[in-house]
Image (cartoon, rainbow, N blue to C red):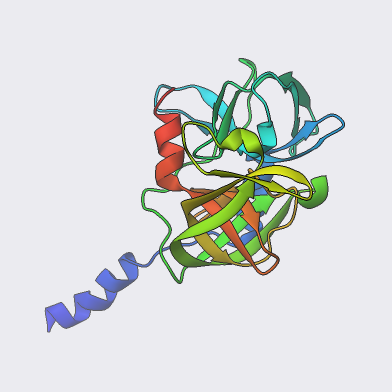
Length: 227
């Protein structure tokens, strides 16, 4: 009988407390940025800490464009900004790291302890068309191999296939990514894909109008481990 009395207490103690969309937005407002390349457009980004304690901004390599291109990083929290050159670009992972100024006091996102699981709710945080920050619910479909076209600079080290198109040369690549059921718009590239706790499970990098794709948590950790 005592076990029957204690069982509801044990079950209630094990309940998981998820963040509300409002809480996730409030947190993201303190940890995300808009990245602008003057005259060329831009995308989204977010703050994390590397295993060695360096604060960096994460975004996509196709947002950073070229290693020596100055980027304007604008805070979503207070519109403060700084100009920086990419610290590291990984074309085959489509990831770019930007060093944060020493005096920077933005809150950083935590990395999720587990990868994205199929059928779970997630949230994309970014600035479509460089508009104000938006948080959109997304359904994780799973991890799939997807085909996507990049700029020709992404065909490095034998990765991808260079093809000529009406718009110029592109690099067509197949890569493993998190597939999500939701709309991803231009400008969302480089934004965080968050789980229901508000932790990072991926980095948004593209979509086809009805579904989106994100760089996996494992690939993000590979890059962060270098610093």
